[in-house]
Each structure stands twice: as C-alpha cells, then as structure tokens.
Image 1: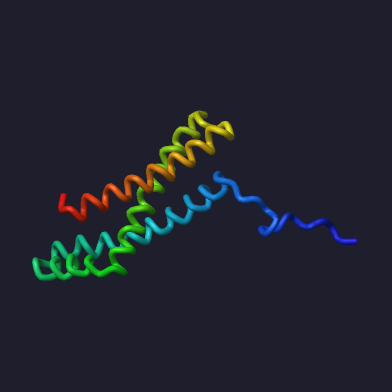
Image 2: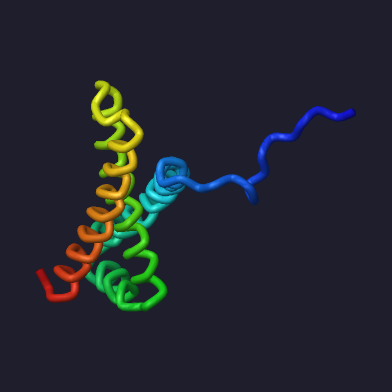
Length: 125
C-alpha cells in the first residue's frame, strides 16, 4: 500500500495570499530583467541625440508600450507588496483577514497607480 499523496493543484483552492506570494516572486524577477531596458535607455542618452530619439521612437510601438506598461505594473506591485512585507516584519498585519485586505489594497493601488502613471505619460506630463 502506498502512502497518501499531497493535494494536487487541481484540488487546491487558490487564496489571495498565495497568489500574491507567487506574484511577488514573479514581479521581482521581471523587475530585475526590466533593468536591462533602463540601461539601454540610459545608454541612449549618453550616446547622443540620434540614439535617444531612436529609443523614444520605439516606445510608440504597441508591443514595446505593452512591455513598458507591464514593467510599470511589475515595479509598482513589487514596491507596494514590499511595503506590506515591511509591516509584517514588525508584526503588523499578520492576521489572516488583515493580510487578505492589505493584499486586495495592494492590487487596487497597483492598478490605479499604473493607470495614473500612463495617463500622465500619454497627456504629456
């Protein structure tokens, strides 16, 4: 007779806390990879007006713009979730209901700040 198996993902009920934990790790990796784009942008500034204008012109491409919006979401989520973790480190917000509430607040603020940032970019501020 074999030993019982651990619950499989198909029977596991996803929870906001576990989703945010996974998303935190993913956005940390994506944010780290996004630094490559920042380095390219900064290099274009030092390479002169022509290189800088070329990089700026690329940002009008819908594919590139989608990547930049995704990176904005990634950076903001990672930052806001790190703030949440800082509170946990000092023992604040560890109760299950509070952790769920702050998780939803983190998602809400991430979406709102991402939209606000890109609206400001689009109107030229």
